[in-house]
Length: 307
Ligand SMILES: [Zn+2]
Image 1 (cartoon, rainbow, N blue to C red):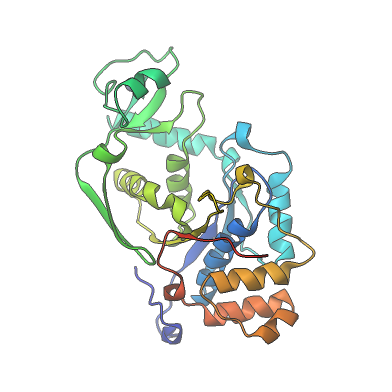
Image 2: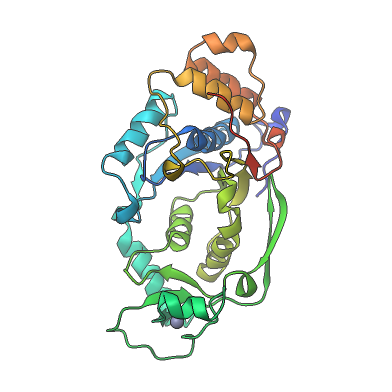
C-alpha cells in the first residue's frame, strides 16, 4: 500500500485504510523527543483519515518506572492527542509472543542459545550462529534466536528513502526471547503491529536500523508489511538521543500549546505565529490539515531547540 504525500490528493472516492500507532515504553515521562514521534504519527494518521492507536511497550520491567504508563497517557490527553480504541499493554500479551516462539521453533526457524555474553563478545561483533545446530538442553538457561540468511532486505522509507540490510552480516541470528525470559522488542512489535492491523508506522530514526529484522520476522510469520517512515530524532550537544537517561525534561501538562507549536516547527510545519495564542485543539487541527511528511528533514537527527 502506498500513501500519496500531497495534501491535495486525498480523495473520498478511494477509501484508504490507514491504521497508525504511537508505542512508547514506560521508562519515564514523555519529553519533547517523544512528543515529536507522537505528533508525527498522529498527524500522519489523521491527515489520511486514519485511526491512531496507542500501545504501551512495557516488555522490560527492570527498566520501567512505576506510574510512567499512566503519566504518559495523561500527558497525551493534556496535549489533545486522543487515541482510538483502548490502549494495548504488551505486558498482557506474553501468551501471544510465546505462541510465536513455539511456532518458529517448531518450524526450525528458531533455536536455543546458551552462549554467555562473554562468549558471544569473544567470537566477534556479530553472533556467529554457534548454537544453530546444537541440541541445547531446554533445562539450562537459554535465549531463543531466530535463524537469519544472507538475502538482502530492502524497503523504502517514506522519509529516509531506500534502505537495505543483510541480516547475517549486520546482526546475525538475533534474539527473540532473552535468557531472562523477557520477550525481545523485535518479536513483540511485529506481533502487535500485525494483530492490530497497523498499516503505517511513523517513529523515530533510532529504530530504522532494526526495521529489517522486523520485516524479516514479518516474512517468516506470513504477516503483511506496513509502510514505514522514520523521523529524525532530536539529539543533545553530545549527540545522544533525548531520553530519560540523558535527562530530557518531562513535558509540561499545563502548557501543551507551547511545546506543540515548537514541535510542529521541527516537523517541517510552519504554523502562523497567530496560532501560538490559540488552543492546542486548533493547533492540532491546523497541523492535520497542513501535514506533509515530505517537509520533514530527510536526516536521522536534528539538533535540540530552545524550549
Ligand atoms: Zn549460542
